[in-house]
Length: 234
Image (cartoon, rainbow, N blue to C red; front, side):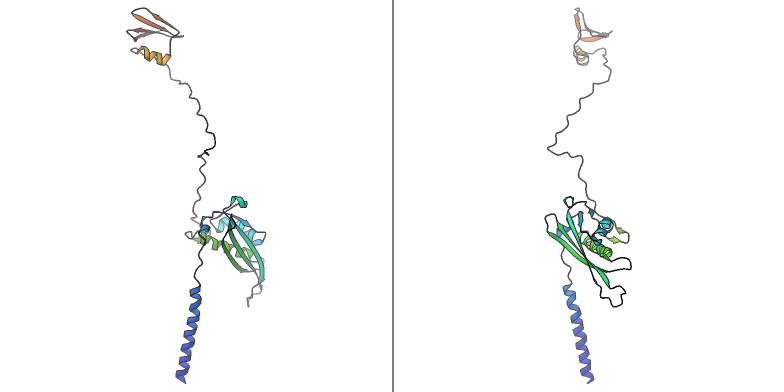
C-alpha cells in the first residue's frame, strides 16, 4: 500500500508539472507591427476619463508627442472605458475600470491594441491608472531601447525637425541684392598706364594731346602721362 501511495504521489506531481508547463509554451510574446515604431505623434480619441488622463500625461509617460488633430498625427489612439465588478474577495470596493487602447494609422489600419484593468480607489475609478498601463505597454513596444523610470521616460530618440533653410523647388528664388558701390578711394599712382587710369576713373571729361605729354582732365583731377605712364596728378 505504501508503494501504491508513493506512485500516486509521483503521478500527481508529474501531472501538475506538465500542466504548469503548458501555459509557458503559449505565452510567447505577440509580434508588434513594425509600423508602430514609425509613429511619433499621436492624436488621442475618446471622451472619457482614460482619454483625458492620457492626453494630460502622454509626454510624461511615453516618447510620443500629442497632436491637436488627427490630420497632424502619425497615428490615432482611441481609448474606450467600462466599469465592472472586480471580483476581489478581500476588496472593500468591488468596482474596477477596464480600459482599452487601439492605435490605428491614418489609413485606418489597426497597428496595436492593449487592455488594462485597475480597481477603483477611494476617490477615483482607476481609469487613469489603467490608461497609464496601456500607454506604458505602447511605449515599450514602440521604443524598446528606452528605459522607463520612476520619473518618467529619459533618452527618447530625437525627432528631426524639417530643414527651414531649404526652400521648395517651386518657390521663386530672391534676386541677389545689387552690390553697393565701392567706398575705397580712387587713387592714381605714378607709373600707372593709361589703361590702369581708365579702369579706375573711366574716360576723362577732356583729353589733351600735347605731343610729349597727354593730359586727362576729370571733374576734380588732371592726370599727366609721359610715354603712356602717369608722371603727375593735379
